[in-house]
Structure formats: C-alpha cells, structure tokens
Length: 159
Image (cartoon, rainbow, N blue to C red; front, side, top):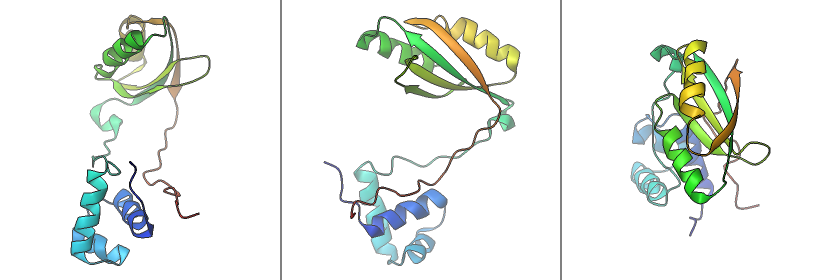
C-alpha cells in the first residue's frame, strides 16, 4: 500500500532532497511545522519506504575515477536466472555506479567510472563481456553528467 503523500509531505521531501543534513528544527521552520511534527513525518516517510536513505554525493574524479561510461549490454537467454546472475556479477564490480534493465535493442545499461580509458577497455573486455548471459556490448564514454538532486513535481496526487 502506498502512503498518502499530502502537501506537507511533498514540502518535507523537497527540503530533504535539497539538504538532508539540516537540523530537524531548520527543516521544520522551512516547511512550517513544529519540530515534533517534522520528526514524526520524516519517520513515517522512512517507514513507508518513501525516503529510502541518505547518502554523500561523492565526485568520482576525487577518487581518481575521472572517466565515466555507459555500457549497453544484450543478454541471452533472457531468463530470470540469467538476468539475476548478470545483475549480481555486474553489481559486484567496484567500477559500477548503476545498472538499469531497459527496453529497446539492448537489455541493460551499466554506468561505470574508472581511472582512464585503458582501464575502461580492460573492464569492458574482461569483466562485462564475460558476465553471465552477455552476448554483445556497446560502450559510450560520458562527456558530461548532470543529475537533478531534487525531483521536480514529486507526484502531486491531489490533481
């Protein structure tokens, strides 16, 4: 059952996405609720799985991983066991940032970050190409990557 997200919850989610490190009192002031209400609302959002966690946004270049790429992969056979084995193998790689199962000519999209193009080549040719079920891959180097830390609409359910 999905929780009923009201205007206050949407405001809380917006503020948490903007800066989840602010003290509870500052978050409460920004939303216009009491600190105790803020604690209860945030706890309820966490309990219902709306807020899945908090994390540090680390620049891969700061960890000497300045090259990012998207690797598109075709899988055969497309069975649940093959897909799960593939996902486990790819997720275990330190270079993996994200994995998505997609529609279209490819079955999966892997976002990786590595030190240099030589390391990317080695990773794709050995680790990704030999992962369970992989029959083909295509690599695109990322020139620029931007990510919105705050979701725009937050699904206004009152429309």
